Amino acid sequence: MSVVVVILRKIFGFPNNKATQLMLTVHHEGRAIVWSGSLERAQGYCVKLQVAGLLATIEQDA
Image (cartoon, rainbow, N blue to C red):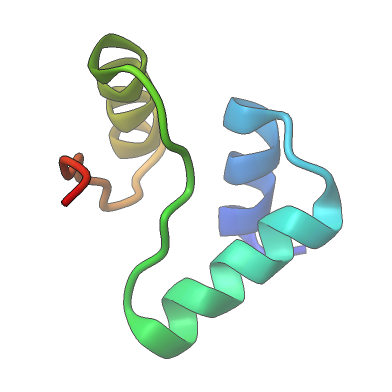
């Protein structure tokens, strides 16, 4: 299992198939929307992803 999938499962509690699909989206498209919600919670997730070694950013909805 990819380390990215493991990280997504651990941080977000995603099932294997959702984490795998997100990983493949990033691989093919260069980015994916992993979570959407409050800014405060998004900042927490962003930090957790970055600490785990992944590139993560927060963008406001258009």
